[in-house]
Image (cartoon, rainbow, N blue to C red; front, side, top):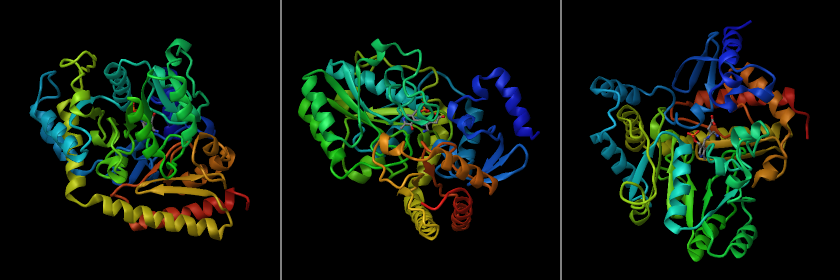
Amino acid sequence: MSISEELFERACRVIPGGVNSPVRAFRRLERAPFFVAKAAGAHLTDEDGKQYIDYVGTWGPAILGHAPECVISAVQAAVPQGLGYGIPTRIEVDMAETVCRWIPSIEKVRMTNSGTEATMSAVRLARGYTGRKYIIKFAGCYHGHVDSLLVAAGSGALTHGEPDSAGVPAEFANLTIVLPYNDCEAVRRAFAQHPGEIAGIIVEPFPGNAGFYLPRPGYLEFLREITAQHGALLIFDEVMTGFRISAAGVQGKTGIVPDITTLGKIIGGGLPVGAFGGRREIMDCVSPLGPVYQAGTLSGNPVAMAAGLAQLNYLEQNDSYTRLEQLGARLEEGVCRVLRDEQLPLTFIRDGSMFCLHFTTQPVYDLDTAMSGNFDMFRRYFHAMLEQGVYVAPSPYETGFISTAHTEADIDATVEAMQRALRHTCPKV
Ligand code: KE4
């Protein structure tokens, strides 16, 4: 038995499923997860000493790779000053000013401790600001484990086949309208059926929790227009795409301006941080200024702020997005060549440093088409990649992430491993 397997046996006795977040469990992959002993740059080392090129990156935060020197030294400098006070600090102001500078649609921002807290707060704020009760979300989009949003959710909920969680009474979910992504007519019908009652739409502008796929041309612009037309708020859940797709996320790339943005992952530099922000008139509804209550003992924790701010500053000062696009384009070129060589017209989707190989030959543009992938083929591919020392997300309903710590050699080795994996695990289509 490996050390990871021994640790997993111990973990399963004291932690539900042996993990602190379901998608880490490798549940449908018919093997125990490996346990990480250390990580640096683009590489992980497990407890048995095996090394992996990592394309999960802590599910997005590790955009500079693991344990980047700038973050480590910022945390080391912060810790001797204290670990947290529950009293305002200078670095919280520095972080808030940085977020507002990077993302122009955000004039004020509130820190939280996770993406879930950010989306929960954003939905409450949309309801409080508009005085309306319904929220629209899209099937397959995952916005954290907020009761009212755990409806037709993606990510781990999808992986484990629980898109509608137990423990969420219908009364909690009844005010959430779930629609197919990329379907304008469905949104028009919802607003027609609920005139003056829809507080907002929450959307992953580039969905990454049913695998990665993209909006059809004009779709996000349509969401922006119809929400403005009906006095509803547009919430861009950029927990995954913020500071990733561009310095200002999808809104920075597309020019589409949401009313509220939620953030997470990269903003914490690997430590627990989320945030939500928007126009001053909306954010001034948040307590203690306004009537929408929102709070958090550890929100804006100075050590977490130091980590996140160091990561953002490095990204800004090192032309990181050009580097991420170079690496992403190299991976895409290699993957497309392999798919041609192996006569496997599988669907590969990439934008910048986010990518996904869908095990279907169909175009993927919503949950249904993402679900048309062959899970067994994915499972065989996952194992074949892991055996070759490449760690891709342990679910076909997740997104791959490249970091600035990945090298051309990592990318080329990954493409070679992918060719061997596909050749031995996937029948010619
Ligand atoms: P957290 O509460 O996990 O920090 O963030 C929730 C969240 C909100 N919005 C989006 C778009 C997200 O992708 C997430 C969390 N992402 C998943 C990965 N697909 C987290 C991984 C996990 O659940 O362990």
